Image (cartoon, one colour):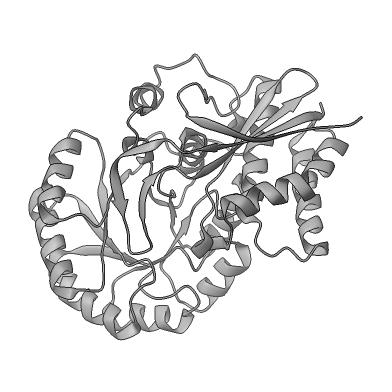
Length: 377
């Protein structure tokens, strides 16, 4: 089958509440949705959640790369096997190399997911069946708590306490006193049975990180995510050694080369694989397999405001990950017109209406058409 049309849209669905991190305050989704239409009538759905501070990409650059560089290659090749998809993705990367485009992971990831979704539909299979086997029917879920005032944290807890999760990630800022109050409240609300890890988004200095972690140890934290800037590998190594708390890398790790460098430098205990930042499912699999060979667990993460395209891709990926630390799969809770009911049906195994490819329906997503590209053949 061959791609005949590429449709690029923006999803800007509003959130129910502002998601405040040390990077920014988000009020809505900021994803680029890719629809690949094929000559056999099948459409494949992909999603890019670009972040300037992670891969160097914006929504505008993702659209530009797909429109100006990826489209011709997609129109010129056939998709009849997973090997064909791998070859196409290699060709897209080579095109970026020749055009000196260094920031393309999120754009590539959207194409990866769309191709796999379409191929799964053509074979009438959920795509994990021809990629990798399910190894976990039960996933360790994690809930992220944004930088909310203490009173709002209580509201957040009571609204979501009925959900099933085993851990929470607490976003922190640079104020030690505020951080202590926040983590203390969360520990008292969520109880001793919930694992708590902290997230600094790379905003601390080495000294700030060590001081914060030492003061928060009494709350039995299970890990610290990206305590210092992405490129500070020495800092990550020092924090691991001085605090004894597991270090999780996020912004520091966007590809296999990053993972190898960090693991070989003994700068991390856990790596956070986000499908969009890592270039899609196939590249994420390479990273995961390397980490597993080095006995390094993987957190399957999510960018704030992902739609259920990346949500389902991440869920399947988590279910096929032996060395899974946890899965951050609650992005749907942010939306007014959320996919929570649909998500719960799928998680319980009761939803069989969408049983090929990713199994995603775009009907509830608010999409704004950006461009439509058709082959001239």
